[in-house]
Length: 334
Image (cartoon, rainbow, N blue to C red; front, side, top):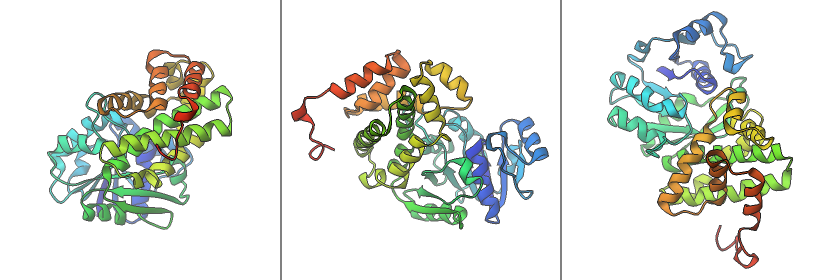
């Protein structure tokens, strides 16, 4: 099978190595030809240091690598998904399968990324969302990892499962692409918020409280938008939330730590030096919450800190005192 990964970030690179390990004819495309040439020379991606790229992996800056591809993996940052989809569209056929591995919600439209790809490709072929607790740094060194391939087309989900699954990368299938994509996007805001807690010096009790209650509000929004509650309790939901909130591999958590230590969001993102998806997702979640009428106090406070300059300690106090004791009925209102 011919597979092409569009996007040479750490995650796209790690996935291209999986496909190569599985014996597929695999191409890794970079929008920057100079970066592609450097990776060809060094057999390493600076964003995935220490991971040797197989000699069988074809690295290129030429979009013609898409000709005849059976599997196309869309792996750019969320803000570049629409542009990338436009570029891939002329090369797709009805027999192609696109796998979206970026995590986010498109700004202003509030569309899930599979919807963005569908718009730009005329829904010519199925789009599968691949998501779960999967740091590129660990997948790149072949540590055991599990993800979910989600699509309403069960055959397409199984096709993606077969393409990626091996003895270190386990793939489950799901028909709930709505829930899987929303879980992957929304958890980034919570990971950023957990990082803020770390930066403030808060410890395990605070982060457990934050993660658990944040999952409750993420699930409320996800169900309102058509996702399944079961999805949010699984790998793509709670699994991804745990790994992103607790690991220093997480750009969102690292940015949050810097914000908790007193840096502005812009200063924090500049210091992290890579895309912090939680910053962009916070705006989309705020807009979705307002549009749907779903109460999301933690996400709202994150938005106020990131976009309105509200002081972190003030929002913590607000969250801890916002309801009377007789209103706190977790078992009745999860």
